[in-house]
Length: 457
Ligand code: GLU
Ligand code: MG
Image 1 (cartoon, helix red, strand yellow):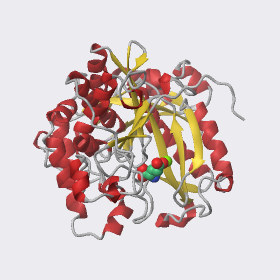
Image 2 (cartoon, rainbow, N blue to C red):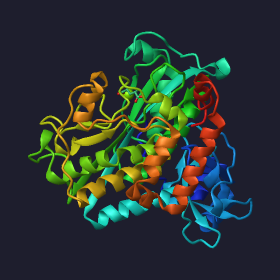
Image 3 (cartoon, protein in one colour):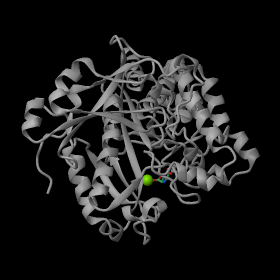
């Protein structure tokens, strides 16, 4: 049922979209909680909006996960001001699942059109340019895990299917949804490697094929919209929350990256462990060095902290391994069958509560710094250090990743590389929303906290 359309950006003009029945364009960005926010403009207004943007409040930088606005970040301490949300016009896509609408990522600029330091997409663009100036190129791809329940179940999130995981019967249970999802992802220009019924009850997963980092982040947002629309069309409701229900497996959005120089993947073809080159090893070592601060950005929410437990393949400790699924950093090496281009590093503590642009910026900043500093990674760990004694973990330099908001923020604020990548203003706003989230959760039952994140992403 897949038509052969050119996947990706739309070449036609907005007149063509209008003739095709598109009535509005939804301009989307992700806030500091990883929550997509948007403005929709009538199709006839789009060309003007592409020039001048639409006005939005600067306070979106200090919205917390539950839509409260915190005024604890002094530069955004009043309700006054306005910025412009400008669509990245070349990326406009007609939504297969909402044919009356097109979708486009946005960037936020100051009222006079100059750069606005809180714009997350620009933060990533800066890191990509910085890496490119050093001759380094990146590819990135997300695995998207999610939970499906019946829409008429309300907030209960009872899993849509509870039989054996990974089986075709699990796919059959959501057959119409699965068919529409693959169709719509293709039409919306989100290339997918595979789709399966995941481990958890009602849990499913697809992987988005690798692309340059900004495209990967744009597609991750577009994929969310595509899933929500397909679920809705089939009486289902999707939760992307890092943890849907306390005690269950979480939804990881594992982030795969590879780094190359002059077209050659640095993660393969070398003399290091599993074929790492010296620079590829340095990339991995850079990620490991800054892991607590990186994870404060890639898995930042209270839901992320509840998801992170040893034994759940979600990366609870600071170590790397070769194809070790318990490792926070899993090296997926090149093989003869798959070729050198296939080699990549998977970051497991990464989820939908991360802003995908900031997440990729943090990863690139840490990895590139490792290359600049010529770091060497420790030996890979092939076991599950969660089963080790504290002493043995200490001997191998394996530490638990931060378990509280205060620990996460401590790691982020103490790390000049990741702070520098985000910029002081954005780091300040990011800190304020994390603290606002923590204050809201203070004294609440863990199950209630987890439940409060269920439908946000
Ligand atoms: N669901 C696990 C997580 O929270 C990941 C399982 C897997 O490796 O696919 O990250
Ligand atoms: Mg998975």
